[in-house]
Image (cartoon, rainbow, N blue to C red; front, top):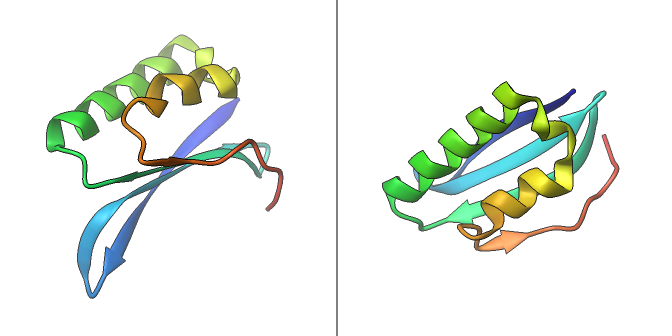
Length: 82
């Protein structure tokens, strides 16, 4: 089962965005960086991730990343590193 981890990005103590890491079995298999998007976008993203996790569809990492890509300012390809 994949797991989403949220990490706040800060500059001088000010939050400028979020990094979302997708991990499976201890490996990072995908990530999305969100910056300067309205609160409404963050609420939508959190709800989407929550729904994906509840339905078990988050095992399809590419599918989950596609759903959040519309609000992402930067995306990375699937990577495998610890």
